[in-house]
Amino acid sequence: MRNGRNCHAYVWTGFRKHRLKKGFRLEQLRVSDYVLCYVGEGSGEITVNAKKHVLEAGKLIMLTPAMHVDELVFHAGPVHIYRLQYARTGALGAATHPGREEQPEPHPAEQWTGAEVFPVSSAVSFAAKLEELFRLGQEAEEDCVSYLRAQALFCDLLATACEEQKARQQGGDTSVAATIDYMKKHFREALDLGALPKLAGLTPSSYCRAFKRAVGMTPGEYLTQLRMDEAKAMLCESSSANRVKDVARSVGFSDELYFSRLFKKREGLSPQIYMKQAGQRVAVASKLFLQDHFLAIGIQPIAAPSFPNYFSTRTGFPIYLQQRLRGTKALNAEQSITPQDILSLSPDVIVQIDTGAEKEQRQWAKLGEAVIFNGYLKWYEYQLQLATVFNKESQAERVIHHVDKVEKQAKDALLPVTRKGHWTIVRVLEDEVRLYGTEAHALTDLFYYKLGFQPDPRVTHASYKPDALLTLLELDPEKIILFWSEKEHVERLWHNPLWKSLRAVREKQVYYPETRDWDPWGPLGREYMIRNCMSYFLKAIPSI
Image (tube, rainbow, N blue to C red):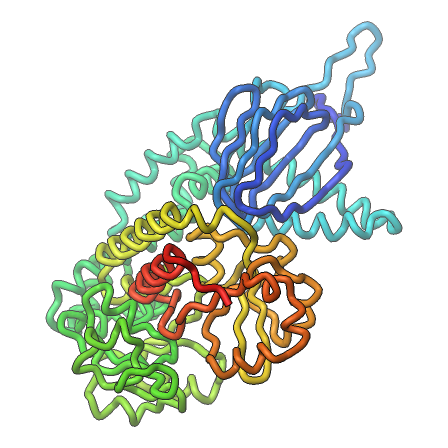
């Protein structure tokens, strides 16, 4: 059987992953190959053939030969780019009748006058396939099977990209909007999701991709969100747990138990506990300072973790929380916090972070009042999750907006300091020196990417490296800032000949602010840290 449509065949010719710094800029580049780029992390802009496009994580860029990249710049980082090059090899299914030769169908991108930049609806899946293609590509030089598998995966990726663009050109997003309105009106009913693609005039697969591109989730996930938002509003108006069954049925769930399980999975606590939110007695049993996040949205915990041997205050709370937590019981987090430490206070809700310690988590899970959260990398992820559970979403949005504003103002004010030289973050402990990386840590996120201090370009690891004195010697950094380091430990290190040999030490470019109470993991601590950081660096900086 011969294919009735003529089209070119394409093969991938090169594939690279780029890790770039914020501020990366590229100008005046003429495209010589077919190029597909996927933005895994970062945000910025690309100008092609005089037309500017916004770039952000999850977006694809499709370029064809002879296009001209006027400028590529990334304003926020870190930046992670996949760049896939490919070539046209010939025609598949071309007619061979004498005198009636047909021209192959052009590559979709050849019909465009400029670059095509658009979001991928299934970003996680697309990125996973790119990673697999990269792995196969490394094996393909010596393994024919790997090459064939890589070529098949490339064709799948290219087809997905072309389908996404075709759906955009055919107005798929407009038809999806009509189905979204329909769902908003009928979500309380037994809604048939299978009928929505027909209503939109799309195939099921095209509809799902277009829907996720427009909303950021699948139709099923969106329907559940509509129902859960309405259920939360109704539960807040309820005064008795006996109404949970009525609420479930009112928002489209016929099974009360299924509704309760789904509600707890999504919101972190049962519908019955959710109804008790007004005037709730909340206890924080985590070693993380979640009391910071609670106070920011107007909830004062009845108990919260403290570190009496670290912080200088009487309670063991950091100085910026001391007054705000008057009346809150201090739980010594330097030792294990047990249910017995809290239950005597008769809490309505006990908040815990999943530490991965099964025995510890089991004792909390047995308590009907316990809400156990997973850990997050970003401070605002905790803020949003807590706000969702305690029905404080609008307050959380205001808090996040305020902190963002403070960060931007500080970044502008610190420009005279941050635009000069490269910085390295170090913590000195009793028995080790830690070298902090450039990502996956609240401290480096704030210091480098929010406040604008330029990291040493040779430091590329995440979080921190322990026992890193020898690594520091190899780097021989230009500027060092010491965080969370005890004076006695710093003085001991200062007598180490290896430390003395560092360039930053010799040139008096080591900075040692009082950072004991600096905490970038919560909104109040983050603002306190920013204010003190500005105060330290905008004075005559006392380097050591």
